[in-house]
Amino acid sequence: MKGISTLSYLVIEASDLPAWQAFAERLGFQVIQTSSAELQLRMDDQSYRMIISQGALDDLKTIGWAFPNTDALAAYVTELAHKGIMAIKASAELKEQRQVDELYTVNDLNGIQHEFVAGVKKCNDTFSSTQLQSEFLTDEGLGHVLISTQDKDASVDFYQRLGLSITDTIAEEIAPGIVIDATFMHVNERHHSFAFAPMPPEAKRLHHLMIEVASIDDVGLAFDRCTSAQDPIVMSLGKHPNDEMFSFYVQSPSGLAVEVGYGGKLIDYKNWQTESFSKLSSWGHKQHRA
Ligand SMILES: [Fe+2]
Image 1 (cartoon, rainbow, N blue to C red):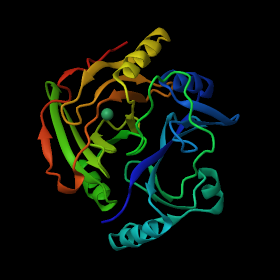
Image 2: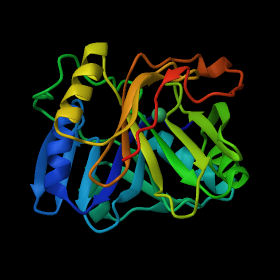
Image 3: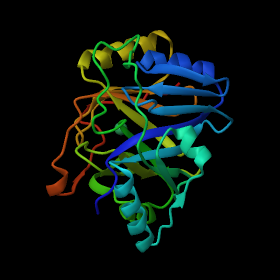
Image 4: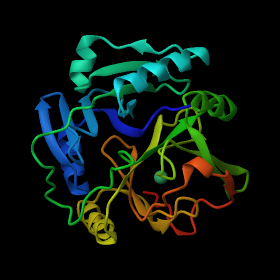
């Protein structure tokens, strides 16, 4: 079905906004404090790519998916209803908050609110980072997220009905009897914008989000800034076999990981054959434990 064009934004509820501000700046975001209870993080000319709102959850609340225009969004919502998913038209207040022309919401089985939007506001002023030498790669969206689920089969069914397509899967036994079984899904040329894996019930909804930079040096420089600031490194520098991303994972002040990557694969998504892999990383990505 003709549908989602990109992963547009994320909303995270966080208990420590000052710590998030400093952390986000180290990663290269432009941080705008819109109130004492909210930060907006820019990565490009879109007015925000992440909203960090004050609260006790310290987890992902919302994933925003962009459509090319309001007609495409309306057709999508009608088609979703035919597939048994009833999207709810958002209030004028929420549309105003998100700075979009149109917005529908759907709650998924993993505790996340999906927002389907058209007409996301752009900024008049140019994006500027105090840290990046290059830029964030956002033509195919913000990046990607990997969320936790309890029910893989139900998740595959639900997200396919939302219009996401499976790129590939990775199942690796990381310790005797412990298998990570991840499913990666795309909406455009980015190898995956969304992924999920069964995790223990106490796991946070969001395992990690990924942001991609246009130069390998910006990955190394971000790694240096994070280690200097003593941010916990969740996984060292390494490379994934499926999206070929060179990256490291750092822990945010909410305990969620952020993957900073370079060189992610673009796919011919209209003629894609699903694959499966048996290793999460080709090399590196060693887990650090405190
Ligand atoms: Fe990732």
